Length: 91
Image (cartoon, helix red, strand yellow):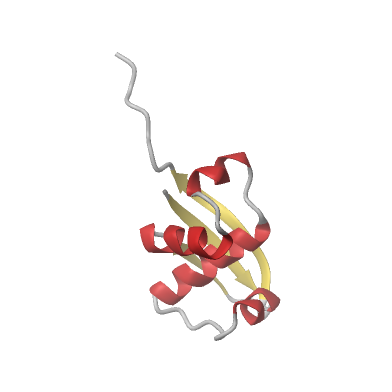
């Protein structure tokens, strides 16, 4: 599963960031959920956490505290979502 997210900060800056397998595993560990559970809806906290972890992975400067990161976000949205298990095309 890979998400491309658009993150808008309160200071007016914005950026796009992509999640990766490490980001998803970090989400599962922190919140004790399965990535497949996200099919039924994604909590804003989960989106923020994935953006936070993906930002760190891509060397985008973020606050040391996850909560401080959330306080600086104006908006976050998913631009593109690639499923973990794409289905095979019909014959």
